[in-house]
Length: 103
View (tube, one colour):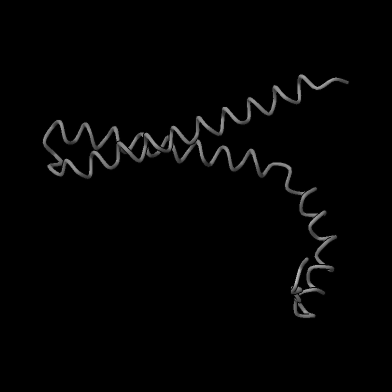
């Protein structure tokens, strides 16, 4: 049994009710958001990998002497790539699930 209730201020309740139509309209207009988000994520991972590669090359030539920053940049790029691969695996899994649905 629920002992208490949650009450929203009247203004918040009115905002939620009036934004229902706006939410539907925004969803219709935002069909490319996932693709844009994915492209931005790919660009960011690419940038991190490029930075890590440059820092490694600079360390090897002696231009950079801080090994810690080189290792941190390498780990950042590695983690970003692993996260991107997890997203890719989930998208492929979702596609396979939809593809194998009976008609």
